[in-house]
Image (tube, rainbow, N blue to C red; front, side, top):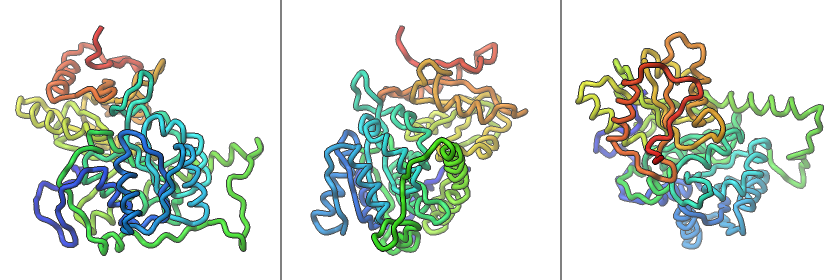
Amino acid sequence: MKSAIPKTVVVPPGHRRVGMEDSHAAALAVRQCNVDVVAAYPITPQTHIVEKLAEMVANGELDAEFVPVESEHSAMTVCVGAEAAGARTFTCTSSQGLILMSEVVYITSAMRLPCVMVLANRSLSGPLSIWCDHSDVMSIRDCGWIQTFAENGQEVYDLVFHAYRVAEMADVQTPVILNVDGFYLTHVVESLLVADQEVVDRYLPPYRPRHSLHPDRPVTMGAYGVPDLFTETKKAQDEALRATYPHIVRAWQEWGDLTGRHYHPVETYRTEGARVLLFTMGSIGQTAMVAVDTLREQGLPVGLVKLRLWRPFPHEDLRRAVAGAEHLLVLDRAVSFGGPGGPVASEVRSALYGQVDAPVVHDFIVGLAGRDVAVPDFEAMVREVLARKTAPRHEDYVIYGARE
């Protein structure tokens, strides 16, 4: 699938073009979703999102309860209580904040509460770092939430609407994490197409919770799971998450039909006839596109595959996207310590295992704690792969650019 954002400068009907910081675009989208409760604790680099939402609530632009909690654990706990009572909720966090709230993150998905969280991706300590990589999201990759990745500010804005649209579907009822690269996106001002409220209201219906707490209709939520039931409960949760896939795709199609901006679980760039494919998640994909153009000009058959949907993992979409290529360079932005290298490459290798036409997977761990990955770096990695005489073992990986 091609990238979502068209090259045209034409403003579609029901939109206006605005210069805006990407964090404020996320906050604007949350406001347009008419949320009822916002609970969050400040942590760099997500703070601008909740600061803007607090300002909107204080100014009367958003009729919602803003709960300035004492910790991220409490933020997620407030969201659980609010969602269970039937409120549309929002939270966001980053890095160590996510680790602190992770206990309740798992409870949220197990209880099938359709909360939405923006995760401003940032490296985990130690050593202390406020800069971007994907170690935080990889720490909770199996938390049971639907998880998507944005590549630029327009996608940050659009994917907030998609998150609520999917999470609240009667056949989904599953929370959603939208991953947004810290600083690369959160603190950058971009030219965005902002939808009129009428467009948003056509896409996102009022929230009608499928199950909610009420004193007149007592129900139990988050009950104790004895061993005789726990396995079946987790099986049901896994099946439910996998079953969200067609609803995720349908919601993207609906947004594309309404706005002209289409999204897909796996997207490609200049993959026609490509012998070598780069594989990215998040903002690094934009630099990779420039690198592909540069390498194509040099006569090298290189293309790009971008993963939009992290959970549920789009196995078939990936297999179709890479079919026919000889080499697949996975750009991991986290380390699986003591494991096979990077967590994304491990999943990609698993997805392609046994496929007759699957490319050889090469794992490059890059960009840790925000270290730059520039166009020459992509060129160097491609040339290194093309110069290799033997295929890598399953556990081979390179922490690219690390000094000895």
